[in-house]
Image (tube, rainbow, N blue to C red; front, side):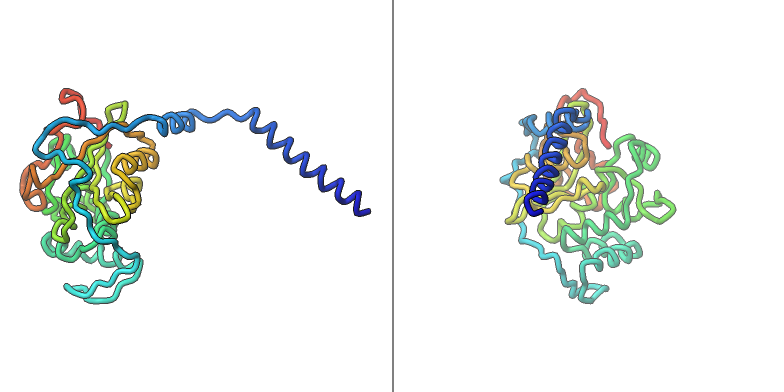
Length: 273
């Protein structure tokens, strides 16, 4: 009886292995899987175009590590907060002026909460519809006090709005306003805010794929992570320090567009998303 039981068990295992083997023989990866496999083997290039605003990753000031649990102990919302509290606090910031909003955001987690609760991506034509310019980088002041909002009261903008908001909210906490401008082979451009801690490089922005904890060991690794998560597969990038071009980017009334300082071909059209 025991021998028959063992033979049946071995037969089931053998049948399973044969089934797996046959499945692998007939499996064909999808076009998206093939594209991802090719992307992971494609080198990511840091563009060497010279500009007073272009920096290298070693120029990014290292900020202290941030714990998951944060305590907010000053300002109009004096309280101990838990993991959900940054999102609750972010909604209250809508009622403050832009200076008070900046004063009450201290960490990347709180900046992320502000963007996710108070901003929404309006699509490729958002800038044209809101500002009359197909690529308008509004200051944080203009965005925070904007009349261009959706039905839920969220500010309508695109990728540069999320990156610029993160930079403005964190600049008074020591985070330099560093932007990664990325391009892919279809010449689509995208921008995120980047920061550095002892653990590595992280990013913030408008889309979920833009929000990455500081665990990438290099900016190249971070760009590949963003490209993989977004499926836009960026193959080149350049780092900019916004303060070297527009030191008053948080509060001015002009277009803070970085694209006059191009990442790729100066004559190429912008295809941001």
